[in-house]
Structure formats: structure tokens, C-alpha cells
Amino acid sequence: MNIILFGPPGVGKGTQAKLIADKYNLKHISTGDILRAEIQKNTELGNKIKSILEAGKLVSDDIMIEIIRKTISSDESKNGIILDGFPRTVPQAIALNKLFQELNGKINFVIYLEVDEEQIIKRLENRFSCENCGKIVNTLIDKVVDMICPSCGGRLIKRDDDQPATILNRMKVYRDSTEPVKNYYQQQNLLFFVDGSGSVNEVFEQIDKILGT
Ligand code: AMP
Image 1 (tube, protein in one colour):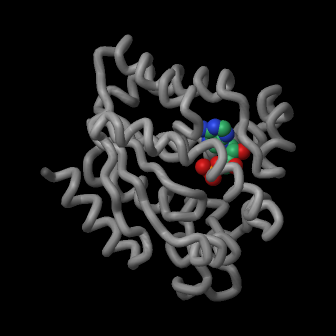
Image 2 (image 1 turned 30 degrees about the horizontal axis):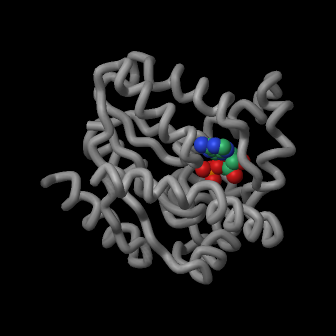
């Protein structure tokens, strides 16, 4: 089974993707995580894209498609994948279709998570992630003491691009470049709408029902 988790930044894609990957034994591919790891390791690619991520802009389609090509073709992806953060443009979506054709695979579900913009901005402003285990927490909802991860005790940190000005820019980039991808998949009858405004478990139950059909 191959799934795309789609929707604006901060809608809960990362959190839900981890739950789905665990339950259905899929490889979770977060392009944002892959790029942040390159930056942290100071690779050539990392240095090239650092300022792009900090500004909340999109990395070029060529770079992104090459990353996805490598990841999807790897052995770890054989059981199926859940894509979180890709595709973000129509050319990326077209390239992904071609890639699946080459690999004799297909996309089974595109799950579109919906939350209104005001709530998304609030979520992003209060979002932190654990430096150690990667858990994503929202300080408005989760019980957090002294910025310590409630799961593993690691340090909670704020992403560089979760600052108010950058958040607004990321929303604009989403509207301009990423939203058209929704129509692309709707035309292929692959798009399933999920209300992402409830609790993590409520949202997961809705997704689980769709995947189980
Ligand atoms: P995310 O963690 O998914 O919010 O991604 C963080 C940042 O990584 C985005 O704001 C972009 O700068 C970059 N990025 C991630 N995925 C893509 C993609 N598919 N295309 C272009 N840029 C991306």
C-alpha cells in the first residue's frame, strides 16, 4: 500500500504518518526530515538548501524528485510507503506517477487533512519536536514540563521555520504551489478528505477507516 498524506503545514501530517506507518508497516518518508538531516550533517546539499528552508520556500523540483527516486527505490520501501511532505507541486506529482509506473507500483490513497488556517497558525506557533526521538508536541495540548519530551525525556526544540513571519510565508507557498496538487489527485479519484481538527486519536480513526476499506 502506498499513501500520500497531503495538506497545509502544521495540519498534523507528521504525527499521523508515524501512526499509520506503525500500524500498516509502511516506510514513513518525510521530505522535511530528510532535508533537515542534510542540513544538520552539513552536507553539500544541506548547505545549498539551508536558507531555503529557513525562509519557508520550496526546494527545487529536480532536487526533490531525485531524493524521492532514491528513497522509493530502496529496499526499505518495498512493503509500501507513506509520503509526508511530497509532492508539493504539480510537476512533483507528475514525476511521482512516472516513478511508480517504472516500479510497477501505484498510489492507493491520497489523504487530505483539513484544518482552518487560524488553527494551523496557532498549532505551528506552539509546536515543538524532541531532539532525541522526534516526537512532535503541541504545548497547548500536551502536558510539557521544562521543555522535556513527555515520551523519552529528551530536549524539546522549536523548528527554525516555525516562527510567525515564516509561518505566514509557508502558508502562502502552500496556497500558490501546493494546493493545485489537490485537484490533480481529485481528478484521479484518489483524494479522501479528513477533518484534521480533532484529537490525534480522532483523526487517526478517520484515516484508519479509509485505509481499511
Ligand atoms: P516540512 O517538514 O514538510 O514542513 O518541510 C519543511 C521544509 O522543507 C519546507 O518548508 C520546504 O522548504 C522543504 N520541503 C519539504 N518537502 C518539500 C518538497 N516536496 N518540495 C519542496 N520543498 C520541500
